[in-house]
Length: 150
Image 1 (cartoon, rainbow, N blue to C red):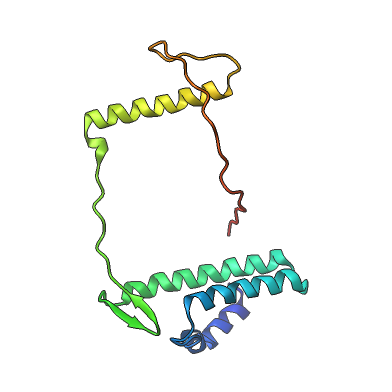
Image 2 (cartoon, rainbow, N blue to C red):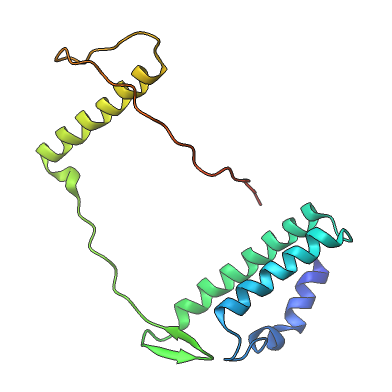
């Protein structure tokens, strides 16, 4: 972090902690972010890429501060400034792969998925090991995105 930004955050620590009171709702927070983005996009006074780069940096600062402070908070249900803190126990994670039959079926499913991909890309009709025609399945696209590395 640049010296100026670091100094700013240190000087503004108390302001950051008290920036929003209990009346500032989640919807208002979301709208504030949207309004900030629109101002940057429509204003043209600041490069959108530079603004995004600095917002990504600020996000890292805030996310890491949240993670560190979370570790020091007592794990009891409490509501402060309109924000509810509710501790939860870790969930049970099943190790299905420990079961031979599950592992075998899972591997067969993965092989079938690969066969379906091959059939989709092929101009020829493809048959599986049992002589059954492998259908050409439909596809759909995920939402396009922008990857940002910092």
